[in-house]
Image 1 (tube, rainbow, N blue to C red):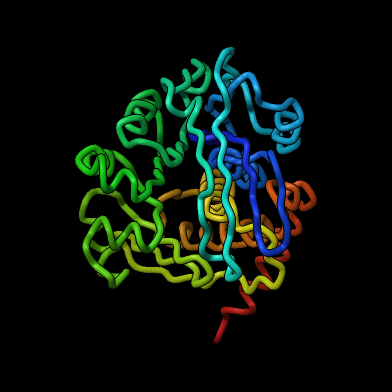
Image 2: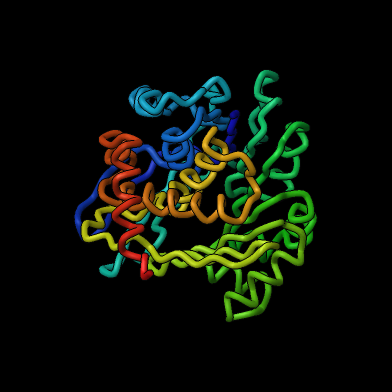
Length: 304
């Protein structure tokens, strides 16, 4: 099935208690596409500047993603982010952000991408997400990501978007900001009432909460002992989730049980991603490794 992702592709500098990595490949679109590629073919729509290194393109090529929607703009510079994580690896400080090409008009969606059936609108202004969504008339499953910035500055656009999508992904602090509720079960229910068929609330090391019109699901995070760099964990989680839902393994892509299993796959891919900087660890594993760790994870949470 055709899965498309739109979002940021960037150059990161990351500092963690385990070390430092300069000018590495980053961006929400990047992590998502790599994670999803283990399950289904992935199409990418994004823009970078003329400073984007060729080795980063080669790294994305390793995952077999369709980069014909990657636009390299002459005279523009690539989005850059520098961040430093605290000792607990949960909290971080953004030291520098250069929007660069992300502040420019959205990239064009290639005509041959418009038949995409599965669409993930990675984190950007909800008006831009809506504009992109309009270009996929045959979409069967549309999921969006969002953040506190848009909840604070573009709430009406976000509410309009939620009436057009099937699923929303956000973290617990964003869910509280959006609904005013500190109880995530209550908050997730209110979000579903805003329009999407389901909402996934990410809770970091505490896993995630799923609220679906047919029921609720709760998954714990994989018990990771080797955390090198948490950057992209949420994006790779979403990529694993959407990749599985778009795969031939799933018949009903909005089925509650299918989404629960998709969240488990997302959890496992994210657990690999955090074991190295950038996409390095994901280049070292296969779908077999993911399935094997999924079985270990199932043993951890099974109680009957």
